[in-house]
Image (cartoon, rainbow, N blue to C red; front, side):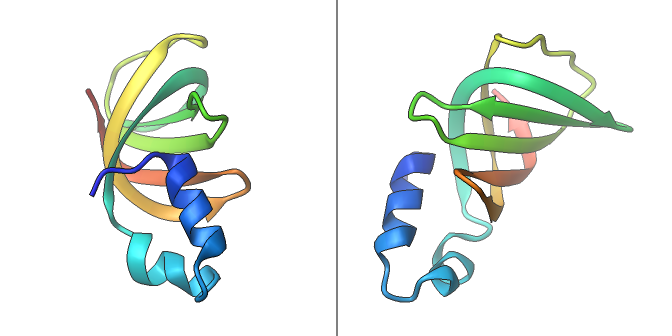
Amino acid sequence: MTFSAKELDDWLQSHPEGALAFNRYAQNREVTWSGMVESTSRADHLLGIEFTDSEGMRILAWCLSDAELQPNSSVTIRGKVVRRRPKGYVVDRCRML
């Protein structure tokens, strides 16, 4: 199943189960999303990448990486969706492609 962050958001908003739909159908699904880096943070070997995709969805991805990314660089990540956030999602256990 391949879907963008916006497609997932639209589906969840229209689903009759409401917020429970995320827990049941979307949480821990593997996704591949791309966008432009806004900022990064670090916690040991975890790199937090805050980016916005082409549809305006905000993604916070936590990847095991020693890489350095500059703001406004493009990034593609693959990982598990773990949580919703305002106009976006948190992705964990990701890797940069």
